[in-house]
Length: 237
Image 1: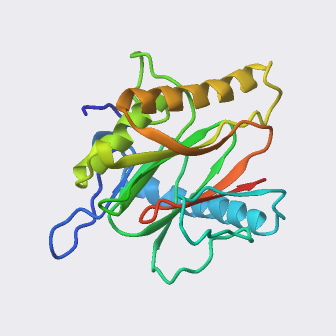
Image 2 (image 1 turned 30 degrees about the horizontal axis):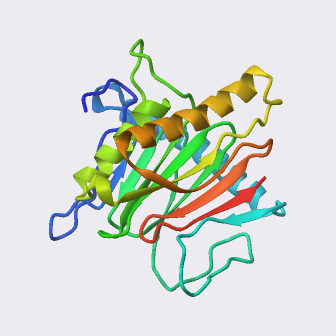
């Protein structure tokens, strides 16, 4: 998909067998800042992310939803973090407007308010990916960006297909869309609601079933998604 500026570009990690392991969303090469600018902003970005993670560590969860695929063992989660299942995973923090997909087992964390994240998992090939979009729909004017729901969904599907997945094997989980700045009658409320609607519309158009969701409300969410198993944990903030 040909995209401008902020649309996701593939930065593939390659193993000895040449298999693409991960794709990250970001700006295209022609719009990336020079090395000096990147170096200057890295400490600021790291500090902000550290403050977010430390703050979340001390927040007691008000509710916890375990949105795992149905399992014969009847597995349940009783804490705010996924249990140790013995699988070594790469940990990644997903920022708004970005897309992540990987063959390498990964634990992806993101923070959602009115934004929406879609988790896609291919149980046949054991890979998955996630996006995090801010606005519902890019109408063809201005910058085509994965900050928009319709662009982010298409980019995530294409990224997984590039890793060898087939659309018919994908299942989706949808999270976010909270009215954290006001009720449903406010412009912020309507935005969050529209983000959720667009997520379901785009997935239906792509022929991908939604097997779990946790959307709406007035509280933000911390989401952790395991790309290899398709399990996801949500903590209300």
